[in-house]
Length: 161
Image (cartoon, rainbow, N blue to C red; front, side, top):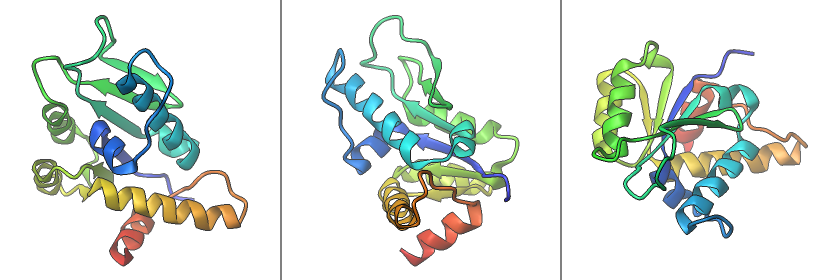
């Protein structure tokens, strides 16, 4: 089985596209971030989680929150308080050592342009969620727990969506 590609996710953008919101946490935003991470852990394989970075804005983050953390194998990054998540995402796209293996999940066209400049794949958040849910439903009927999407398989699935 080929190694999964890298995934870079615009966290709050995906949160809104997924409709996954949490009920329990110190703040509604924290609860929703946790719910999103839990949902992604259910639908992505361990190998994919190890190669996924999720970036969130930090303007309304609680004081003392670390800039980088891990959960469920994901790397979670918070943008500096004076920057937007998109700024950090653009930097990560620019610095990526294997951009052709990178999928950027965001509906922000600024990030799509940055991804295309580096020959990375850019996918709208709502299309990515739809593809993941479609694949997850198909896999559940085959009693698999996690979805393993090779980069070309994700591209084929999204092109057919």
